[in-house]
Length: 359
Image (cartoon, rainbow, N blue to C red; front, side):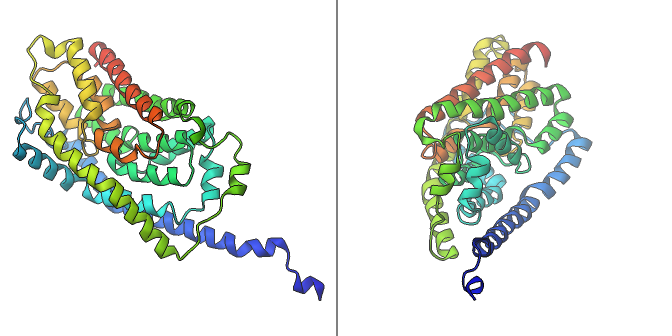
């Protein structure tokens, strides 16, 4: 009788484990369905277009011209419309997954896998980003959601940065539209940014990151209480209020200022170090949809810009942007944000210098 009235501890844990597995399965199912609709299937057709036509469209920055339109309200509006028409589905999916990761995946699971400051957690975060194929702004809400679940700075950054710079679809487009040399350079600098910069960013996190040994953190972590739907609505609502306004306003402002950020340069200056510096900084701040750097680079090259500029934009344009930085800045220490920004600019400059000789 005593054995029946006192069930084993393992028996008590089984329902919770089954529930956790079910919730994780639901998250994975939603992610696969969303990515299939928004990314994987459309990119399959886009890859065929790139292979047959050696083009994926015109430059969203300048169209078929060498320069962007002069700053104006119309220029701002035109860019915002073109940009959001391209990314809105992925942006919605990013916010959805960023909110769901906070309520469907157990925090203890995330901490055990992604909570360490070791290279292992950073590597897993970077590898997990590859199927996402999202631009920096669409991946940002998921990075925010991971940080709210105490995922380490390195792993969260690796996921955020890896999405745009290691996007396998973009690499395929790039090979057909530009050349294999651009693809190799993108892979090399993408790996450095995703895994090395993200890993070393842990050193700038201070006490905000999870300790190397996460057992204590796991034991101290408790799942939030309340109905699942209520918790998800709260998470999604908070994310919408904190992410969307700054996102929209910054895209509009950048759309208006693109002619200033990517200026007309004299024939000699288009191949010089000054052009590489200007375009590396501008590329770091500017915002584009996924793979839009390819037609932008192709257009600039067709109008006589040097391969140094192309190399700088190859790294900086997709990696981060002012809107994506505004979306994540509350989730990372300021020192980490500055470290990432400076790293992107420096890597862009290095890519530009190398590109001058080999592209």
